[in-house]
Length: 311
Image (cartoon, rainbow, N blue to C red; front, side):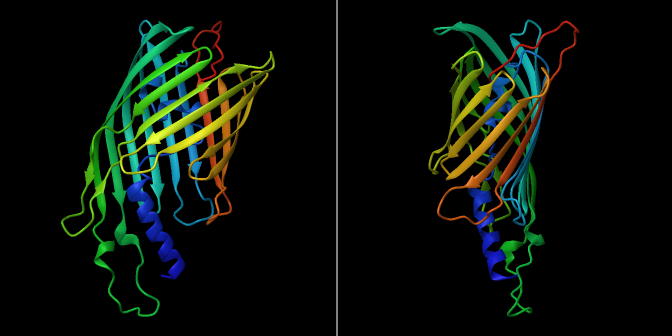
């Protein structure tokens, strides 16, 4: 294996073990169920969302993420059910999560009428690491035996429990969640490093300012706390034009800049897209990252009207 790809593989290993176990999104403000189970039922209708994220396009083994979720209020609309499927892959490492979601919300008044929701999720985390697929022979000495550290694949499943709390009103929202509460361990045996699943805590929120009848400004933020790692944050602002088109930008603590847009194609169908580039001094990849999202909200009565939602 040539020197540069080998170094990149080692970097990918480090990223996977330390950080890539938690899928990240640029459009978290439009895809909140992926980070907080308490968001279930917030669209006040059956809502389905599909998202695909391709990071560092052009680099072999670059991270990719796909999610699919659906949620809906039930009974008296205090309770909501949903499910979330996430697949996250980087190089030889992949992790999938399958979760069922339950949320209960109550009306509250904190300056304005709103709802406070409590949510839980439970399911399985599926982890895979195909170390044996790596070609680690030296070009200088093809007879050299492979390093035993690159053998012993992992294929394991572990239970997962997550929880969250979420407040929303007409103009504001605030959420706190812990998508992974179980300290899962993926062990290859006594001779290899043990892989632990991260337990992040995520705080996010936003507010809508009505500039005039045609324009609304919504700043958002997200902070992620993981033991032993620096706090990660994302600061965002989106401008809504005539209740149809969102345009916005974000800055991430990982020194990335994001440009994004979301279009209300019909009163039921939304499409979102974001493009991310690295803004720091070290730019390994020039092609950036892409994220596309599609959301559809069902209505089962011809006279039914889906109220526009800012969150």
